[in-house]
Image (cartoon, rainbow over the protein chains, first blue to last red):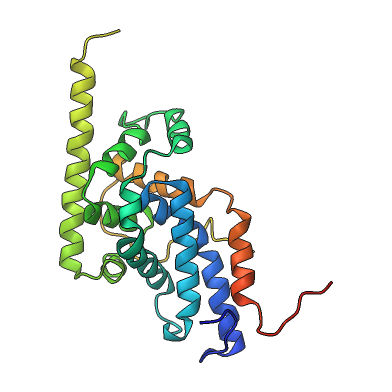
Length: 182
Length: 58
């Protein structure tokens, strides 16, 4: 579809659609980064999602959940096209630099970097649900739309993801404490 | 372009007590969302939303 091709949306609806799309770019970048763990690939993924959303704008029902719809487009594109490339990517050095200088959470002693590393060790289905709900603040229902599953599955993946994250982090703590100093 | 860095979270939150791991997950997400958006996103949006047949002024 050509850019600017007039479809079913009226011009004011089109403007609203554009505003919503632009406003969501930071969240799309964050979700994409969480999925593919690479800054450049994530931005490519977010841009591809924007292009696909624009091309499919006539299929979006105004008044329904735009955020879930956009996340779903991004997520579907990730799983359909860029997944194999994303698997080959390595840790983002800029992200690593950033998280290494963060202080541990005062009350818990949990480092954000520990959580980020543990997140990457999770199965993709659990990771995406954690990103959508704990990261982005989506409801169970919205996450179910994005992940194309039912709410029960979302809750199950979320619980298993949380438990796995904590197990990985606690395992790292045990390793850290038991390793010889120096 | 105006981005939605500080968007109020309208969706109902899952009823869970404070959890430092979840707080860290939110921070991971929010840190990326708070980054400056590269200019090529603005270029892309402009390109997508350009009216057909509209010529750029010289």
